[in-house]
Length: 227
Image 1 (tube, one colour):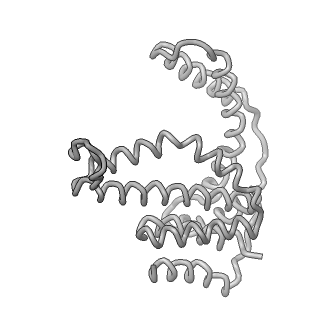
Image 2 (tube, helix red, strand yellow; image 1 turned 180 degrees about the vertical axis):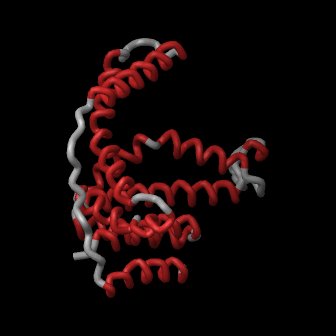
Image 3 (tube, one colour; image 1 turned 90 degrees about the vertical axis):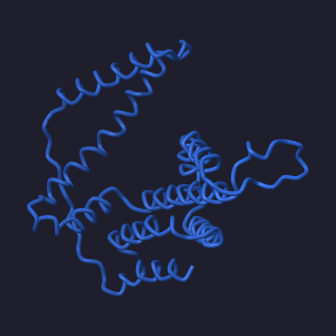
């Protein structure tokens, strides 16, 4: 069983280095992530697909920015009788595909981390990892508690947003309705925060990971270096 701290460190290494690889490295990383999903549970892919669908406009905006605003040689499509000045650049297409692909793989990786780790494991691991911050005056206990409170409140906020969206469904999405939506959500969140009772939060202390497991993120980083 891989220690939760090692899982988080491995994810951080993956997220930091995936943006540095070329197209071949990106494809190899994608194959590795897909293999992990198949080995662990292919059913975990459905929530990740939902997350990526919600970010489709963000992905599209990144592709437009890279495709048409990156200097370079326009794509050569001799079979199309059009002005090549309107085509995206070769460098822009390559960079845009790499950036969107890297973001998609990070989403898949973080989804797999969340699906294979309990909330207690994640919080205890973050609590353990944040201990060095106490040397510079930052309380790692408060940091962990605030993360617990944020995660506990996230589901409630999502329900509030869904309720407000249902109440304005079918209405024209003008700036006025967008402003009403934002103010209504903010008002409900504020009222909920003021009415929330005080409660006790138990933090589970995490033991240090086995020394040999630190080889996993090290090997992962070495693999990216070789790519």
